[in-house]
Length: 359
Image 1: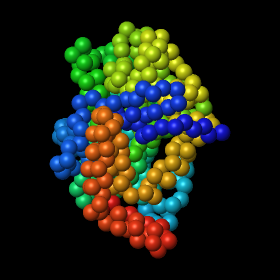
Image 2 (image 1 turned 120 degrees about the horizontal axis):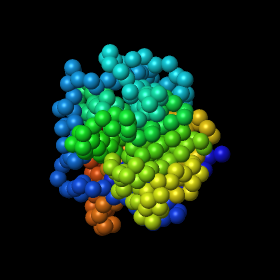
Image 3 (image 1 turned 90 degrees about the vertical axis):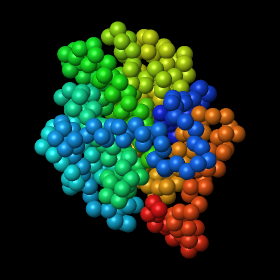
Image 4 (image 1 turned 45 degrees about the vertical axis):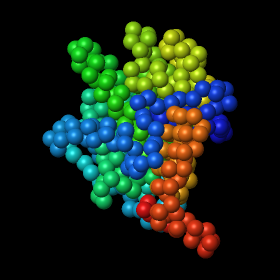
């Protein structure tokens, strides 16, 4: 049975509303949209990700594998299963802690691929995350992210989404190294949350500590009934350091977030749904399938409109309603000269499916 809860798209900069709490979550350090022209990617994210991308070198330890199935108009409408076979687009010889799969035209799946380490976030995985964020935010003709309309964030293991930081690796760091790592992780998750296209996290098994913080960067969270959620850092005499103390209370309210963080308590999928952390609870092993189903609904729509809508909600909820309406006005104006808008009108008039190209 699929359960639903009312929500607005959530992100680092978004407010997600639920029937239990009127407390939203707001961005930090993001400037309101001005009436002057700004790149559709968003200036704050772009500045951050340029820095991240500049750190990526061909000889670095960064390791990503890209897969794709050949897109076509018929395939664009199909539902894609987890078992779909894809071909690599990009690969190097280093260890792949992340796998990047293009399921169909416009849908990209980012999978944690470190099951023996419970998908714990170590230096190598963090480096790979830097790399993929940079690739997804490039706006040149040959960039990977140019034609991506929705991202699925998931795990190759049905037992764990991510258990957070690699504590064994962390124990070998100096205090300065640990501080630098957490700062880099925080910046990476800010970059992930700032991606312009909608993102869906599909959680099976444990999403704990940094694993939950990663999931909270998504616009939607789909949970398998076996999933567990928590921020148990206080049991290790530390605190959530990659956005957990900020995103969670803005999502579910300060009191509930404090209780979960102070007690280091883990909660199940149903409780996470009741709190408003997740939007759908499905059967064990069905989270990714549900996420892809929703993604297929999303990618039928205009890609420029999706980015503008996400950004309008994002920045509008940082300000009062009057300023928010101005932000909506400016975002709407960016769509008016697009070919996609004209294609949408023509398709409606001709009673056919629109063929949006993102221009």
